[in-house]
Amino acid sequence: TKRLEGKTVVITGASSGIGRSCAFEFARTAPKNLKLVLTARRVDRLREIATQIREEVGEGVQVLPVELDVSDPEAVKGFVGKLPEEFKAVDVLVNNAGLVKGMARAPEIAEDDINVMFKTNVTGLINMTQAVLPIFKTRPEGGAGDIINVGSIAGREPYAGGSIYCATKAAVRSFSDALRKELIDTRIRVMEVDPGQVETEFSVVRFYGDKSKADAVYAGCDPLTPDDIAEVVVFVAGRRQNVVVADTLIFPSHQAGAGALHRKT
Ligand code: NDP
Ligand code: 8X3
Image 1 (cartoon, rainbow, N blue to C red):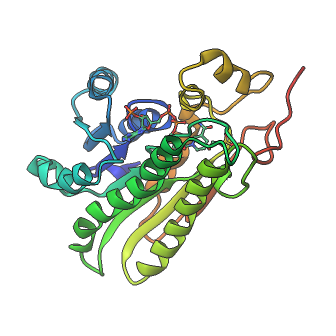
Image 2: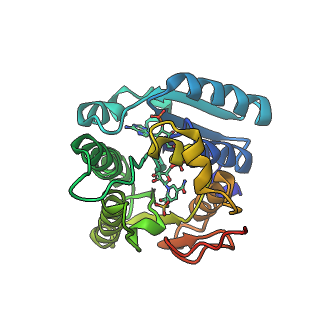
């Protein structure tokens, strides 16, 4: 869509899965004039993605890979200041970086896992939002720009073995809903995209690198692909400025809730 032309889009967690797909989908949708700031900890991967995007859509999209750990508050505070001048006028922030660790139940949940989930999925997302909002607020009518937060079905329907992850995604939901109210007198849009089951590195990370445990999550299922979610993210960003797709929930056809999965045997 032409509406995205000329925009500067920042994506967190762009090195894999949904964030990576969002980078490609924005580039495909606005191949003539777009600036993409791709962030994650694995900057080598971001560089490869930048090359692949250039090969696919050409030079009309400027891609800047930036190493950023969203769970590091100082790094996030410094992020906007360090952006090259031509990438500073951020229009869209996709808060996608996030992770789950383990399936442990209380009182067996490892402190490190609790902390990393909260400081990435919640504090990281809040800090990124606070880093970018001052740019949005410089624009007319109280400000303009898009915050797109990747939540989860897990934030709406908590499940046993996911208490911390679910709590982090419920926090994303509360923060998004409160922020939308705080910004009601602006043109800043706060939009939440909540996926169900998507096959990415998510489960490999959950099971500490155990690929066979990760594969078992999707056995007998036909999960969403990260591109499916990226299409929704780019769709919401591409609506007319007065249209706020505040909330979305996306399942594959065999899913109807966090624990409601039909498996083919
Ligand atoms: P992936 O594991 O494939 O991707 C996660 C991304 O987050 C990676 O690019 C990773 O980059 C990044 N990330 C993790 N920690 C940090 C950090 N501290 N700082 C910066 N980036 C970080 O999983 P998904 O694509 O599935 O996950 C993306 C989002 O989607 C998450 O918020 C997840 O909770 C959510 N989600 C996923 C679902 C699913 O079923 N897959 C369903 C619902 C929601 P790097 O390691 O290079 O830093
Ligand atoms: C990921 C969905 O239900 O596997 O956010 O936790 S779930």
